[in-house]
Image (tube, rainbow, N blue to C red; front, side):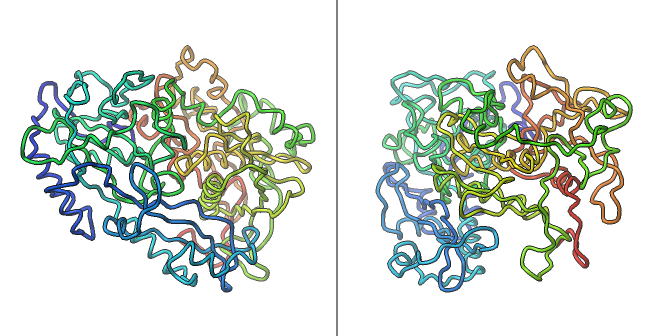
Length: 597
């Protein structure tokens, strides 16, 4: 939810006075439960800790590469190194092994989902990338990842003396959670002690609560300030926060200024760090819960100017290079005349339409290529699969490729959509994945739904340049499959055949993004009876938490107001998201299969 959801509120004037003893006592308690392994080093951090934070280290896992045939078992490999928290050359692995389990260096893959390369698994390559001879089973790989994720805890790393940094220790009472003090920072020293993101307050502030809050935003450093404030920051290893650049001046925590948190003297800011590994340029997606609103806020602080949430996933003009590949003019709609008439706005509700082989959603409708099995002669979970070929254009780096493949897998696991990676430029219809130099500031797709029999759809990963933006890529694939933004449904801002309105749009504030809030009568709202095994019939409830919904803010308010906290989700597909694609594509279970499987 939002930053204030289900959190104890702070009453005016009731802030507890934090002492070193109370903070460190709570740290001892929470570390005991969070550190499953309870290593000696973790325990030592609560007493006499490192004299400086520059001694801190962490595992850094690179992107998984192409699928390789190694010893008869297809797998992807990646580098995993131990690095100082400040960045720099790799260190001996035993330094990180004392902090957390090493994440897996390989994972199984399937040659049915894309090309498998031969001849890239020589002995020298195996020794370079893995401590094992290269025959780890899928079970062993999964267990290694589970062990690594179980060690996602935190540790105290020192104390910051506010006076030495010439910053005020306490803020006023009316500073919002999304504190913008550091937006456009130009001071000589660190802004907010180098913890520039957020300012969360609570009567019951603990290291555990602050840790949970900051890591949910994808931020690996946090501090407890006298007065009960929790502030967040990011290390150099958390590259996704800094967009793979050096942190701007004043926004990085000065680790060299940390001193041991001993009993002598006050400690205005107690500093802690996340002890898990970094994955594909960011904190592992599974331990974060950031919304697209959180992304826009953090990106704004880093960029030094305001970035609206809509800009994270949209562009106002598609570059000519993408249009040339897309060949929009060749797109042919399969829609019946009655689908695009005004009937579905004035005379009958949109949820009376039929889905596949007809269209019950916007854009070009469902993709057309279907087959009965994924492997020859082997029936899978679904009676039929929809196959969408995709190809990485020249210039897409391995980090973006790994994030895209993970996003594809999110849809594959819960629907009958089978995205298949092509080894060479495919014949249309197909999806071309790009990183356009003109659009590095945006992440978007060119089509909603099927592009046409002789046409390419294109997705530009630009701004989505690491694992931190995995949810945005899942969102863009929703557009590729035929999903509209949820707030474009006819019942979003209007009463529509007994449903809605669900939003109050502040049209004076939306500016250039007004078209993202205009209602589209062809947006999916449910469907009619499509025969035996139909995944859904009738009205589909409005989904505030949809991965296709924008976040609340000064552009709209939700009706009722308590639904605002779930908008802007970019972490998981909701039941409504999944059901929409199951219905639009008529994903019907094979005989003997259940949704639980």
